[in-house]
Length: 328
Image (cartoon, rainbow, N blue to C red; front, side, top):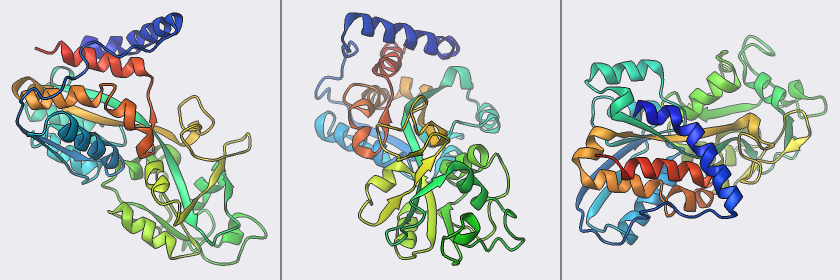
């Protein structure tokens, strides 16, 4: 497993170059076949952001491939999901941020060798999206610096009661209502650690466990602003407006064509993951089979876009698939 992780980037690059040279993107050998008679359960929990994608993959797997396998997908949040995964309560742990060193240490304490027993699978790209109320016609475009500053505690006053007019002259002199996911979610951690660079969040922020609650709160308040994954925005475009973000070269709308590490929305782009317990994959055929389905051409690669995620290069999914296909 350790060697696999080290060669993954090189392997993906070589495969990508080969595919380009050949002018094709052939599917990996061993694409899942129909109905192998597997049964049992696959237990998944973790990221609320990843949940719609993984739940869709699970539904397709049970409908189109293995009707006797029960794939159970939860959405406790990235951090809460790892708390179940670390002691071995789940087969997969979805996450909208990478596993932390302290979580790896806890896995080791629970008898798992991270390098040998755990597989990190990058599923897709997500774009952190700032959303506002449909009646907000003034803040439809903001600079990345304005967004960071408005969400930082103490930027404007000690009470963190920030007015729209504090952000930009000419905007309404009404107090901004800040919203976001709570600390259980990798989205919060990404925003706090990467976007805010671990500086304190504005004290008036209302943090919620459920993304549906955030959608509802923003849709009912003209002065609200919130952040979450792009997938939750695209499923609620009738209720919310996505802020176009200027990273220095003009406003960029978050959408599948701009979300990516090398694309225009790179400043707010992140990877989303699932982590697989390889011990369980070796012991339980249905877990291994579902893992292979996730990274097959019928899995994340096919339906990421339908769930508001930008898919990764086909070669990366192929590399994951080939590793799992050779698992003993």
